[in-house]
Length: 544
Image: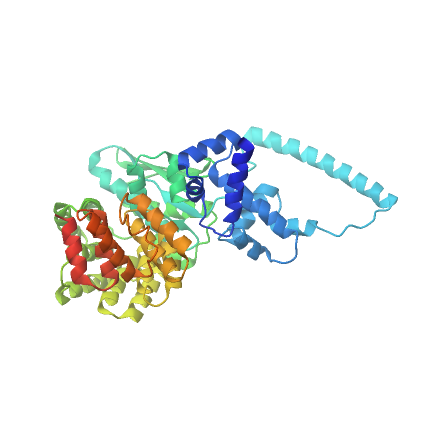
């Protein structure tokens, strides 16, 4: 039975080799079992986790392709589902002990050997064997004496920063949370890294999943764990970088100093972590990471408190939290009127309060635009401010300006999922292939409350260009995330575009007029279709 089980798993993986997004979650879905059940089976039968099992099948197929001369190494990397030839090379070398290029060169035409060449070859092998034996003994001695690691798993350049473990007086809790978020933001500025947004991590941690399930869901190569502690007048940060694949500690350090140096310390930690993961960091990225956002710890404290209230509103639609956030942002500006992120936070507050109104007033739009421009006047590298400008221009119908602003936001923060999703919406009506591309980019960085909406737009775009199986898959994934949203919408075969999605969601609503998930989706899709009056009515019904 074990053999049949492994054969079936292998066949499914091989059928999906070229799909770089096919991972543990998809394999469990194909087997019609839960992720934890599949993980338990594989550990029992193969002593591998799901990611390792899939990766080894990909690498075995790569070996088969390397024996021919039909493809370049980069082409083979993509053919077996690696999104990056560099990462493919690292995994291949780790598994086989040589690069793909070296492996390919081993396949040489057979040449007859003379007795003399056999004798020379035999001596050479004896010498090599003896050398390897001596070297192995030396390595063993050094490893035992100094504790060096002789083998490390290759790390995919992707990371999730876990919420900080806080020890000490609760008055500094917001400082600790801010440190965690700022380190994540600094890492997100590096193009060579894929970084999961903070709110996604918070959401998954609130579900109380195991760390292994958490890692598989977020699909990251590493986790950053931090503990914040106060010792007299100093702040101590314990930082550990964990290989998400095998749990090994890649980097562990203690940082100590007074509060006034905390922003410098955040930059140091982000750069140290990125270097440990082998990320390429440009001069411009380094400068953005090293920039200190404010000199006022009090302003930063009010800012972090405001962010927490804004998050509560986003999750629970608590209008009191929205009011609290506005007051806290104002207090932050009292201590530092040049704190640029406060203005983008206030712009998003305006957005939260007014976007779903039956008609969007010019006064509201002008206010949002002014706040974004004010943030950019203080910090020209503020990615969120460019997203706000882009959304302003998209609503106004200035698509070229919106495209330019979204591109600038991504240049400054290559991991800003909101910019990718904004671009996906922008291309919805004229280039579905671009919608698909940017939805994938957004979904790989955001696993939070907006993921079902991203997946539904992705499914709709696939359906529009004729890929019905892919459309059904992503609609089903969205359905799993929010239980019964669009229950009838995702099984209907006639979906063609966003307008078709609206029609089917309306049909779903006729079966259950109080389904808040369907109402929310109708609000979002009508917003996509520039039907703000309808969007407002559906959103208003989610509040009653």
